[in-house]
Length: 479
Ligand code: 5AD
Ligand code: SF4
Image (cartoon, rainbow, N blue to C red; front, side, top):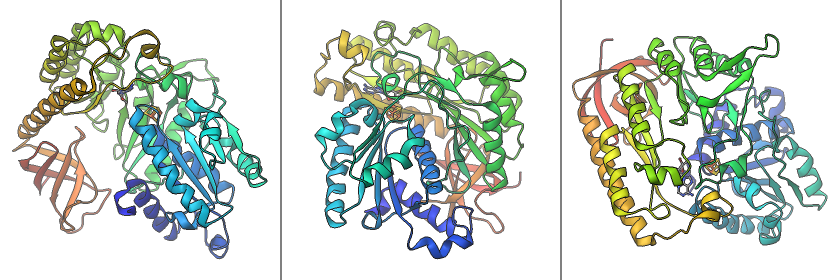
């Protein structure tokens, strides 16, 4: 079961790494290890949530807890939850049933719900799920040690306060799901866009940007520890804005990118997510100027139809989005663009759905994350519009979108046959220990036979000779 769960496998990797002498398991603490309390954490949802779990792990390790992948060994079971679609919440509730059993077998174990669902449901959670002891929202993780100790005394702990300042800038995340090569750096929190379908502004609060120097320092620290790629994370990275208190000068996202790219040419930089309305030419020029800023932009369109985009409150229309895509290909011809797409939004007609399909062809997305619309309580759409597209229709439209995107991804990848890419090796390929896997600048997974002397974290050049819709295959060539 654990092998199916990437988070848990990641935790095990982290533990293995720690045993090789990382700061997290300092020599002198080894003896205390068996007697120390253990936490187990599972994460769901977006990359930001996974990144938050690493902040939580850091706070808990400061408080004397050690990570474990064995549920039955845990004194504290945490689940970092997502509310974005109903299905995500159902999955969490199922996991809580399983944690209940673990708790029965090991009385005294505490169960905590973190993240977006904690924020959305607040104290209602404690009423609905009797065996939950802690409910902690995304901005309250510093409070965890205090909440844990009051829960140990029998008082259920809740803190769902949303902050206007918290960025956890000073916390050095404990890398849980780490391959030792790529890492996420959270650069901002919250979201001020009001997309009508989206629960995020309610669960993660107002947008705020993290101290730029702390971001650069985190990137430099990762480089020192052998990491070779960082992904700058935020709900809307292009609206990053931080004011340097010493000079009063604002730092924009383009400037931040430049600063992080300057850490080392050996350190690749990625970022996610870009809102089409906010990505600037400055960002594109900065990408074009720096070889180590990857040529890949996640630019969610959500719908290809202007009327639906208006209902979604995306603040751009079809033509505007298309001109943004044209601009990206103009400035960075070999840029890969990916997208998020929602089918069956309130009142969407067949013709409007066709506009989404034609947008996939126009933008030539290398890949997309595709969903059918799931109404979320409290959102603008839930309050204003009827969720009137039958589930059968939503799912059929989703299938059409997936089918087309798979074809386009395949064509996109076929065009790479014969090309040579610089690839950062991330580890063994899933299928064979004889092969490495890594990514090219466009974020495509590349699989190729290992060569002597090369290891994860090294760059190599791979000439592509085969492609599927999801992967490129090739062989190492001289750079
Ligand atoms: N229903 C379906 N998909 C949604 N997303 C966000 N909210 C919803 C919803 N209510 C999708 C969007 C977003 C991605 C993270 O999840 O496409 O970009
Ligand atoms: Fe899910 Fe959105 Fe919260 Fe991420 S921010 S965990 S996607 S609801």
